[in-house]
Image (cartoon, rainbow, N blue to C red; front, side, top):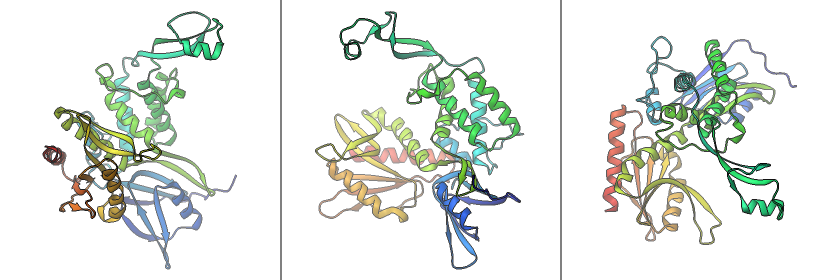
Length: 392
């Protein structure tokens, strides 16, 4: 094993999303390890400094003797609103202060821990799960197609399918995966480690190998909702516990672009589907031969027609305006739309742009995430009203 950099004194680098700082230069090995994480980038200058540049990822990563912390570009409290959790998360004042904390990963793991402990205090959720297996006993439904394919006319053993009442359901699998990830990658206190170990024993019989299962929101699992949303955030995050180029790397990061995209979809779905149709994120084919497809962030389909397509953009419009135009023009052309929409995570106040050659009208909208939560709700309400107005 290569020799890791010896840890003497931890150096702290704090950035906000998309912030740049000119800081003393680090060694080539450490710079390479930082860049390989994909968390932030480090670029050397001709002098004694380097440029440390954050993007849309938040979290904490420790590289050698350097700890890098990136916080959201908006108040921490708003992150839980974006996740749909603002009304359901409670923090004890002597442990975690959501308004003042500068450790976003601690907030995420601590809130997840508390919610799972509460939601499973009376036991794990149970339900029915479809099971397909080869059996020596006839029960459930015989899978005729599988029987003919695997047994070639023989009647024994039998390929069957049945509904099993179990706690090995998607909800518990999702939570167990997040618990394991928190214990491996979280910068946990001894108390949190103890509580997570205690919690993991409740899930000791849950089979995480069936991680391709998906849960659906229902009254049956309503007491799990907050826990499941936080579990999804943790499971979609990136953890580090390795050596990169001989440098020890550990930590956990979350990409806020995905959080913003899910937030917009959830809020617009809630407001627009009451007027009919379906608001969804979906892969659509762009060509007539169905060979090239792209994922559309937000699409409203009603009466068999696409009413609008919108693309979520977390970055500043000035940094990716040209590529965004190519993208939405492709969507508008493929689906014969007269207009197309870009939604940014910051204020945007510009007139729509008509592309040449009878191209679509491109609208740019903004949702200012630095505002208080009631003001953000009003902006989403106004955005929904704008979409309704343009399709009538």
